[in-house]
Length: 464
Image (cartoon, rainbow, N blue to C red; front, side, top):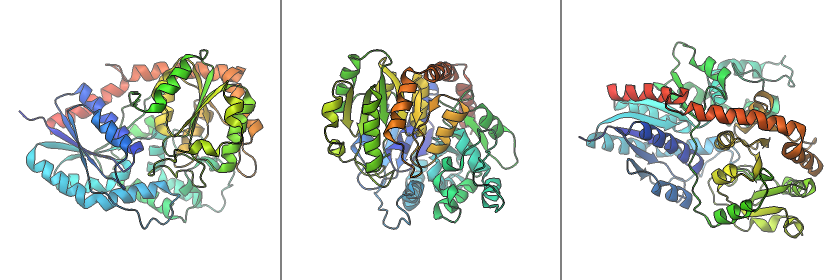
């Protein structure tokens, strides 16, 4: 008998492809009676990273690349969310065609879409399927979506003190600077699209969130309160990608780490899409050098747009942008690699003692699962929310102060690096992160809270 299918639709980009497929792998590991077909929108040619990743998937997951679309009419190239959502919206006719074809050939019980692929939810109703959103981000962000009408009222108030933090229900108060960029400009297209997206979150039967109770207990409690018209929320994390060294940088990084002392190395990476300005790039380089601590830095070419490498391949000659003489001066205590490193393995290595991170949610979860303390350095999207959660809420991260120009200067960077790696506060942060690491492991055990949430959904699939 043919297995019932679950169709999944990510949004374009490796950062959103991997989370929804790692969720799919987790679901199929627990419930192998299902099959997943992934329908993938793309901008330009599919990157090698995506193709390589898809080749590593089990046979119970099939994938279909849709015809490529071009983003010629993006109103603001710095607003990544709009680019991602537009790439899916342009692909909606292809998504509908593939879904109809799949339904004609096999028994499809449910459609699971990335939060930016919410336009495809209408096809679930048309084809009589259960529908779910997979949010590869925090419960804090989801709470912000559902709270958006009240949030809009607060942000639009002329009497509000701009210095007052914003209180999202169940979450740590958020400073103004840490709100996603569209929130700081209520007249912007990005903010209007956020409000439209928030309304769409009421459409599906349920929402999967890659988090767990112990990490975000307050936000999850608020989200799971039964509110009329709000879908069920299922925390199912932490779900992270299993490590695999498939890049020439991988072996170099791990061989170098093998030679270092336990917990002595700071890993520095801004994710698959993050970039710094040339001035900030220089200050970071000098700050790492000044700290005297060992570091492994994944370097990308500087850019005035913080998310400039999200869709495009990074420039391989990124080492040429480093300050003159930096590589020679730091060769005894630092390793600099261009563009990519095997992050899961690096964070899990015994020599890694800290993570200077952009606080993308994938990286947050990977640091928690591996128990690695964080220096929070948010760049774009909802990363400021995550940074506020880690530093002010969970207290498992430090954050460098910035000057009036928004620049973190070398002396400040060096101070924070030293404090995390060897200071008293760094020791307390490490202790709290160890507690979270243990809680994360428990959440995905057979009787863990996240596993139980998935069992409820699997029963829904079976009964449909």
